[in-house]
Image 1 (cartoon, helix red, strand yellow):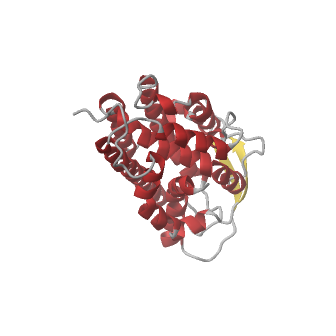
Image 2: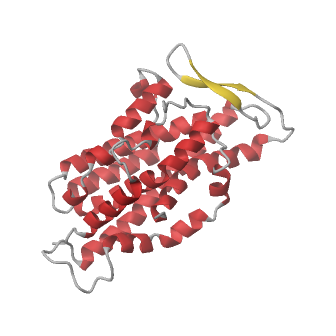
Length: 291
């Protein structure tokens, strides 16, 4: 079926960027009002969870940017091809080397939900490239909007260097004005010519992209809880007073002093992990609605 046409259908109501915003409004409002979001702002970040999140993001962006490169000249995507400004794979490689050392590729995990996300991106890029814009919009504009907020939280909570090591993912060196760039991106996206059916499919794919992200973070939470039960965590919730240090094999760890709170972590550790892991996804996605 031909999903694209030479002229936009006059019956469509509004630009694609506005339609995307409206289509995901309900889930945005739900995310915005969760306790997870409020507590993430408090900086309840564990280095272990942070490294897991960054690892999964690497696999996602590796696939996304490979499919973007495949379709960079395709008119269904080419108007929003901004590799220098937006692509994150190289930045994630820098961060992962910082956290895991030179052999980071052999150490980072790829959970099944991340593999499912990657599989969907590969399918879209190769079989339904007009849907690629939904994934690019959901990820890049969210990261661009929420990047500085997340960067400050992680830097403070994990005692990361003020020079930015471990936080390249959140730094967009080639975007001098985020607000203006987002306006340009939306304008270019709105210029892609498509019919009503194609627009509807893109709106549905944007929801799929969000759900794929949620599934990734849900599985990371489960894996993190399993690690906790193996004795990774202290018996009481720690107050982190820490700094980073490199281990002999190149991994970055936190040198931490723990203050016992007298409160059991059986329930609270799960809560903290949800705060961190889901918070990363929700803060970034909620930021799509900023400016």
